[in-house]
Image (cartoon, rainbow, N blue to C red; front, side):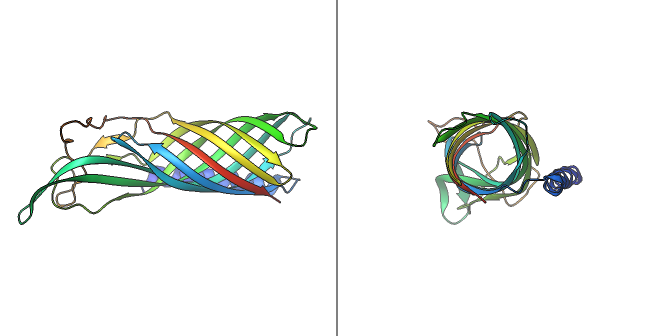
Length: 218
């Protein structure tokens, strides 16, 4: 993790801790679920997310604000040529998992005074890539790919709450191009020009993902 990424992470964590310390109402929510991401490669991938958040008290019963600290996996794969001195050429998927931590802020609106409470919300996060994990490769590739350490993303989502239980759907759009052409590694190349019939990864691709999950507030 770069010094800049570390400073952003520290700033985000300090903000979340400060908000938790000043909130007069304890309404902590723990949640998690499934995520499907487009990381700029041929195939989208499935991962999971978890988070912990707290509401910011606001006047009225329609609008609300909240903050959270979340861990999100973003997964994708690319059909790739590999060469090995002993086994020759092979085509297989090069799969990447981005492990990300993101301090987040949300603003929402809900219909009050009904049993099942629908809520529409928007939000933003600073995304810090903690690690970038690639699958084992059956040989050597000659063109390498990687991802930036930081991103800014926007969220739009809808949730339904019954008592302390909430189910949630969210779409996330990245604002900063993330996919890089990386040829700094000598013996651990990540991905090569794709085989015929697959598209070439787009340098500077902005990442997107959808999330479906559930949470419990106490």
